[in-house]
Image (cartoon, rainbow, N blue to C red; front, side):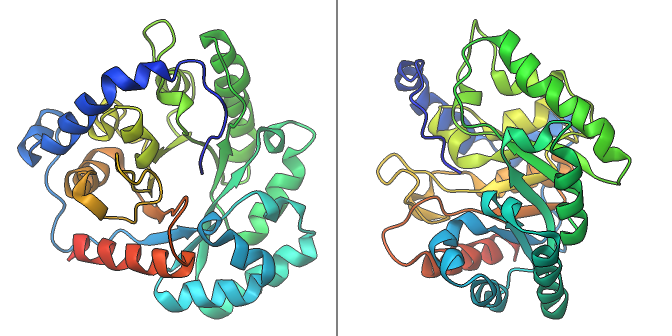
Length: 297
């Protein structure tokens, strides 16, 4: 989901954006061999889910009906976001029953930082256990301007929460926005998070924000083997921004990115996310799903 914070380091983007796009798009599959990667096998079928933020307006009007429509399109996985945290356990059980009836799973949820505090973790665990989620993903929207703060307020919080979540067969996870890709004193905040959390804390890669900030998503996966167990397939193009639909304009090197995710990153599932769009969100995610299926064929 889009980070709408005013980032003081946005000037960094102008000098690195084009270089990052060229580096990522131009990398041949053979370049992955340095870290043991290889092209995705033709019979590999990592499942894809939908980040329900993509259809947030429909979801707010008709939760059950929207879930049914999404599943009917062909999404076997759902990722819930913020509003789910206001459900009662009874409401979560109703949603779980619907998912069971439709044979669809929830593997992860997006959560504010507050959901990871000792006071809130019991509720977080209860709701996610009902939904069947394995990864409790932190989404940080507030701007952070120092590496000490990234370690203290993000990495250390994730580590502490992960120790508790492990007791319930769950894991903490982190989803990047734009600010995590903007260097502070020559270091990427996202790397600070990865380097200061246990290996079983998932680093959920948002491909769109990575490219927008001039970074190379394939290089990131290679530097952090086994940590990218989920990837948000969110398109971004210089002309349409996040309004682009998956595959538009050919900016993102999706085939190479999927190859790296599956052979180096340890990806278990993909999540399609449509941040914004110029037409009906349901139509946008349907188009995105069709493009993904072609990538896997």
